[in-house]
Image 1 (cartoon, rainbow, N blue to C red):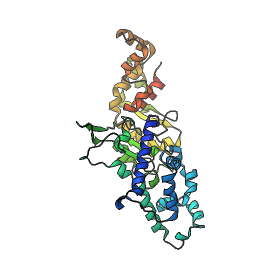
Image 2: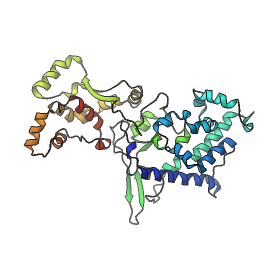
Image 3: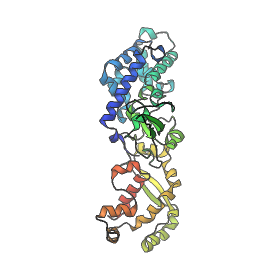
Image 4: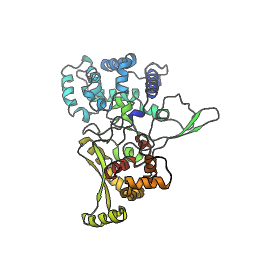
Length: 372
C-alpha cells in the first residue's frame, strides 16, 4: 500500500472543486430540463442549497480526508443534514449501527411531509437525486469520438500528473493513462486506469466525487477483488493518506522448514538464495492493514509473481558494504548509493516507489537483510 495523497497538488484541488461547482450549476441551474435535478423534500432542498451557496460546506464533502469519510457520521456536516444522509443510504446500511440508532432518533421527529409516507420509496427518490448530483458517470465517461482539452473537468485530466504508474493498493500491476495530442492542440483520450471508490458509490453516493474516495487502481484490485466490499466496517487502509509503512512489512520465509540447512549453506558458501524454496508474506499486527492484505489477496498474488523478483532475491545475500564498495571500484561509480542501486536494480528514493512494481517489497527486504 502506497500513500499517494501527497501528489494531489493544490492546483489539482482547485481544478477539481472548480469542476464540481460547474457540474452542480449545470444540474440545478441549466435551462435544459433533462439536466436539472429537482429535489422534492425540504431536507433535500436544504442540503443542496448548502452545497450551492456554502463553498466551505461543499469542500468538506469533496475534500474529506480518509478518516473523515470512514467516520463521517461523527462529522458536523452529517449532524447538520443527518436525515438527508440517512435516506441516501441503502436500507441494509441504514438498518445497521450506528445509522439505525440515528434513524430511530430522526423518526421520532419526522418533518410533516414524511409522516405516514412510505420511507423506502422516499429513500429511493432521494438516492436517485443524490446519484444525479454527485454524478460520477458525467465525470468518468467520455465519448472516444470527441476531442477534449486539458482544461475540462473529467477523470482523464483529474489523473494527469497525479496518478502513480503502479497500483497503490498492490504495487504489482502497472496502470496506464494514454492520450493523443491532435494537430489543433486538442486531445483524444485513449485509456486510463480505474478510479476505485474506497467507499462504494452505490452505498455512499454523496462521496462519489470525493478526492480521498477516488483511488487510481488496477483491474485486478478494483474489478476482480474489491467489488462492492465495505471498506468502512471493518476499517481498511486508504492510499489517499495512508500506507503500509511502519505497520505492515514484506518478508520471506522457507516454504518447508526442512530446507533451512540447505538454505544457510547456499547463502553462507555461495551467496545464493534458492527462490524455489522461498515464500513471500506480509507481517502486520494492524487490523486495518490485515484487511487490505486479505481482501486484495496480496500474499498469494506476490507468491504467484515470485519469478519477477527472482534476480533481486538472488542478489540480496550479496548486498554488504564491502561487496558494494568493490562493485563501486570495479565499475568506477562515483558514490556508494548509486553503486548499490545499480547492483540491486532498485531505486532507494521513496519518490520513485509509486512508479515501480514490487518497490515496497524490495524496500522492506533491503531494510531488514542488507548490512548497510
